[in-house]
Amino acid sequence: MHRVQAPPWGFAAAGDTVNRIECDEDFVNPQSKPEQRLCWHTLGDPMDAGYRCGADKGLNGSMDFERVIFQAD
Image: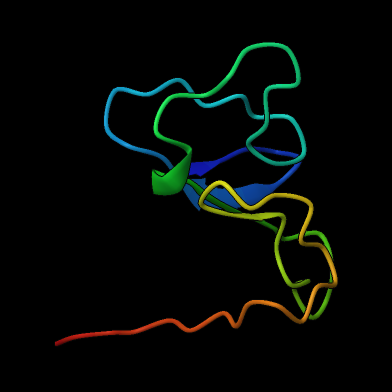
């Protein structure tokens, strides 16, 4: 999991490099295992829809995906 001052929230596969601009993105080099990445912007209140879900990017405000968080005890 990564969280930076910008501040996005997300994850990538263990050992993969995370480019922590506003959200995990690399405009020059292809990222490894994009299907194992997630990134949500956390600047808004309420938190916006999120930037990426796997290889699908640029999802800000998109209604194509639903954010669901599960918790187990």
